[in-house]
Length: 485
Ligand code: HEC
Ligand code: HEC
Image (cartoon, rainbow, N blue to C red; front, side, top):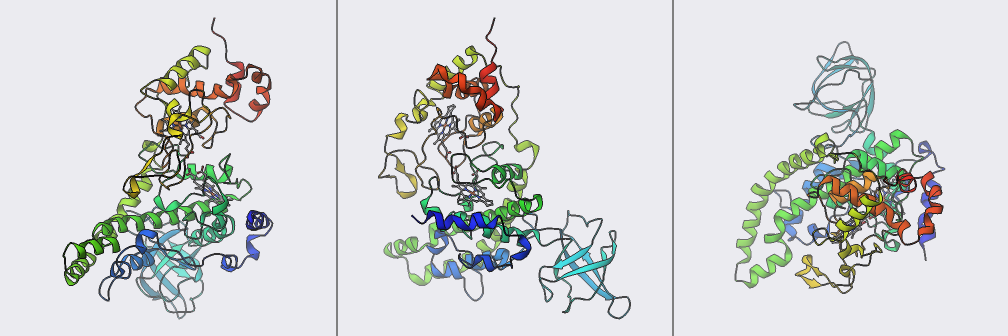
């Protein structure tokens, strides 16, 4: 078992201060570049690599996201790259050596009120950070305290007061997260194979434990909660001791990796039905000619793919930004129903009912052993072949056991509102479905019932409940629930 050595860097990392770590040195044990997805690698070679005239999937990705050593900031994406992303419109000099640059922002965005420094993200000065001695927030004119070592040109991108969030996010991620989640966020770091459930592969853009409704992405607050407190009952650790700015940087970096992965998946999805190696072979077998397919691909790359490369960015920006708005949040239409024996009984009825049928997966007593856990499932991703192990599977193709509700261990949080969200929105990517059409009152009855399950089989268990109550918001209601008059 090499689990212990693999986990060591995590323990050590806590004692190292950020300042002592030189960018890149912690990466050496892991991949130093991003990997392309299986989907990309199964495309026809020209679709992957493009041709002289038109970029393929790999170049489209590299141009927008760079690689871990040279990250790129694609202004369109809802990621906080640090500071305000601007571009240089004009360069002038008030007296020799006294450089003034006029900065503009993308339409719809505004210039910051203060500017202490600018960091160049592209151009000859890329990577250089320069102090600003005077700033005009109206015109966007920044007087630089010293001239950078190289020539500044119109069109160069620079971040005002920032540009470091992403690079420090990367550094922290490589140290604390990558040995499980992988350099590219593919969930495939060196430690991953020993773990069950597997570390999340971010690239699907799907996260399980959200406070947002079933069709929405995960919010920043949710990501923040998960990284702070970890996921109980799994190997996802808690990073409670991390400083606020480090915490923020890591979350933005997770979003960056997620968006890169999702962007790649969507590009591949457009190409794979006609231009994967497998599709190519069967088209040849069906009598199509090689040059015809290749010129069709050429045309596709030059027109359709080029267009979707830009519209996909807008789409992603829109859905990810929407997740942080009020509309995406699950808000119960009524407060929690008082936890009474009647409410629990009603909850149990609903739990067993034919319409909700929680028992089909979780079992009649909530032990996580319903009939669906012993049936063999079809795999829709593999022409409906049966899986060779019984039970349910999630979108990452891993065995997905319904939770044993007798243990009282909830991965998405144990407050009643957390369980409300879990039932309302389901657990995304897993086989726990959304029950969003169930009246909110009924969901609260079910929550009351579910929270009572751990204490049900053994009536004596209520005696030990107060200790559980000390660490839980949910538990007091179980102990002190008023008996109706
Ligand atoms: C020891 C391995 C390990 C380390 C280190 C680790 N994770 Fe995880 N992480 C996991 C596992 C396992 C899961 C999946 C749990 C599940 O599916 O219930 C997970 C899940 C997640 C999720 C998904 C939550 C959801 O609702 O879907 C996020 C986000 C995440 N981790 C972020 C991080 C970040 C950021 C770091 C570093 C600061 C990190 N993890 C470090 C193992 C790890
Ligand atoms: C089709 C199968 C299926 C059905 C039906 C189902 N669940 Fe689940 N449920 C699961 C699976 C699978 C998980 C674990 C998902 C994971 O963590 O990846 C789960 C997890 C849970 C959890 C754990 C939440 C947490 O934070 O850890 C609760 C609570 C739960 N289900 C309650 C219910 C209730 C109540 C119903 C009926 C209203 C229900 N489930 C119906 C499959 C199902």
